Length: 275
Length: 282
Ligand SMILES: Nc1ncnc2c1ncn2[C@@H]1O[C@H](COP(=O)(O)OP(=O)(O)OP(=O)(O)O)[C@@H](O)[C@H]1O
Ligand SMILES: [Mg+2]
Picture (tube, rainbow over the protein chains, first blue to last red):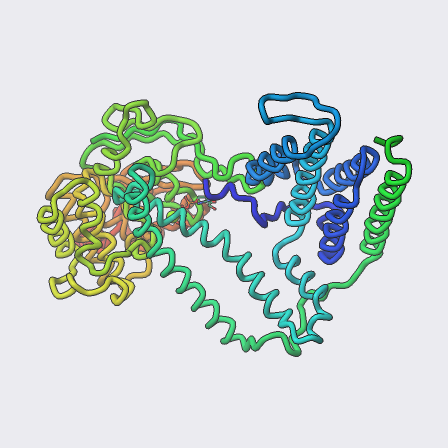
């Protein structure tokens, strides 16, 4: 049950998207998110859809894997849609019940907003599904590198991130194990009122905290034993460098954003003609 | 308290990229009062199998019957099952949480509805059984040594007075004396109370010494099931699975190859000594 959380989960496969430099994927994801906010009208969303479908196809990640991430945010999605549906005031009224009314503009905003959010989540899931947490933090460290000049501890932040990401599955597994062990001793995590449930968590949380601290201690010890002393002068085993495919990918991403900008501009110009 | 396992399959992380078929068509019958050794290489599915026996994981397919009743049936009480089938996990010391040793051991009996006095009585009895003296009753479980923590954790399950006791590698990481003490206690308990014991282990020596029946698993399947000496005759196959017969089996085999007419079924040092003595006497 706990294992179903896909947050930051890597899906191993051999695809061109997997092989891309993590920096390319990070930048492209950001560009894609920007493009979603630039997008206006059907043409813009069509292009965004084509781009997303192509990337998904190339990534070789099964579609149902990608949509799994959507389940977690379905509530937020629904709330956004409902708010937009009823709150946005347009001219043409489509439906009315008491003070509730749906207008053409409200409907359009709600639909586009839903698409935008779904694409945003799918877009970022593609990045996390095709990039190992280690690569991701490496890429982030390199991208944020210039910030070191203004005394931002980029390396330390990246290290904290990669350790945290690494620990998520470990702690989930540990939780699962302790939960089972206590269940075998007759503990009941499901029934009872709120207070009883909170009390029932003690036999789970105490061992979990102890194990988390023990692991943190062990890790700190192991890092120190290997002379880890922060980022200064530290070299990488696999330094990141751009291949020709990465440069091409950058080209495609920027080209795509440009196209989206042009479309949106045209939309603003001709307005109604393009819907 | 017989347990019957019928065509059980279990798949971890089903229909994901990380799918693992951990159990394949397991069929077993476990009658009352047996001392069973469950053996297999790392990752062969031993822990997965024993977790099925008290309903901690639900089989992907297949049925499990406890005293003839389907444990996945509609009005079967998992709570009752867990009170009767006690499971000591691998590295159980990680589940301790109470302020002192005695309260931690009381956790199980209390969950089963025992009164405070009754729980403490059972807890004390269980603690003495695993060799933890009274002086430790009020110490924090986190200040004990690894082996002592292990004993306390085992006592935590013993105090529930289960009819079937399953121990998942209870002696991993213990010194030889601690290991013998715990196993001797478990054997005594099994004889006195007539409970069923399933001992998961890597050590052929341990298993050969204590158990009446041995189940060997490999890659999620049951490969051998019988009395130890029978199973040890398959030395070669055992080796292919990354296991080995007890050292005495090898010794007796070597003697036989040199022309000594000894009984090669001897598995413990005592049995081997008897067999050699008999051969010498002619
Ligand atoms: N929680 C889990 N999630 C996914 N796979 C698991 C999980 N637990 C075990 N497995 C896998 O199932 C298989 C059987 O594991 P199991 O723990 O039953 O082996 P085992 O025989 O107890 O091994 P060991 O002697 O090392 O304890 C292994 O391949 C293991 O990787
Ligand atoms: Mg195991």
